[in-house]
Length: 363
Image (cartoon, rainbow, N blue to C red; front, side, top):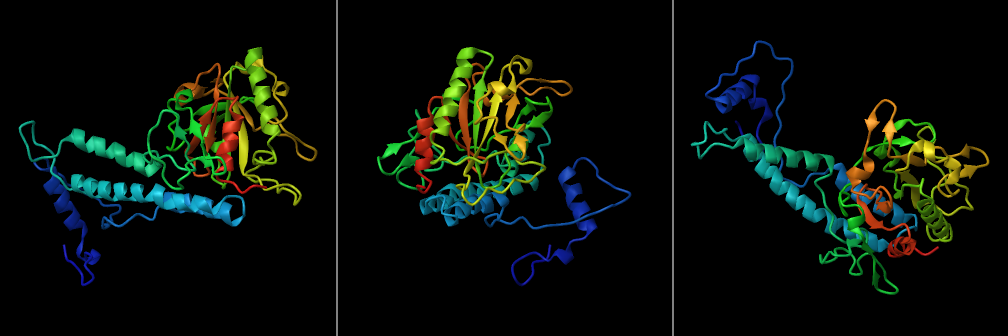
């Protein structure tokens, strides 16, 4: 390998034969040959902080909300506290991962100098988690409400996820969604549309367009008591519409109808996922906040989904995947960058209001 004057290796010094010889050395005592080459390339592993899309979007949506006058400028402080630790961890892992790729595999169990395939597999899985974003975990801050039994210190603004006027720190109920980890990226499972039974990945309806997502896991709404809880949730949310403007409907044909100048700018959209048998509940049984009607566009049929059996694609088992009680459900708040921000009971609309009071500019 030839090093150029700027300290980087000279790519022109690398040939297919160079790569083949290196691969043959790694594969010993096995042999490696090829008869035809379709394509080849070479790159240098960089140890600098990666300019990945996660960094850009983590800052982008915060700047957008602050510039629009929707969010307090204090949310910008969380970019450094959230991403610096991730970048440091990623650089260290990148160095270790590069070392593993260039290491010689163990010849047998007595080989102390070779690389264990168990170690390599563990690193490979971790690399996949980083690449997908699921390996990133943000600590409690004004944007990630800490669990009620979490003693971790808050990052970012000193107030934590709180209303600065009363110092009331907002906490989450992690036990309500045991597999939906606060601060981590929200996973996706198959659900079916209540209206037409079409199967969807839930992530399809959570576009990264700068809005929060309030996910109402409504539980078994075929039970009158549970449906009553859902109606009470909708009533409480409607009474706070001036504090938390919702997008009026889900995107239609991949676009959103613009809001009129008289309407406050939306900061969140609301989706419902219930666990009752689809045929046991009529969509008009749900409160209008969850199944909105527009004079021009009609009803929004893309806002209520079911964790149930699809006609053709099986059962997504979303409630099980999220660790949520299929009878009582819960409410999960997703940040614009798809990370879990807050988890609460259906009755805890006040807790959701306090979360937003800590980051939004008062209307």
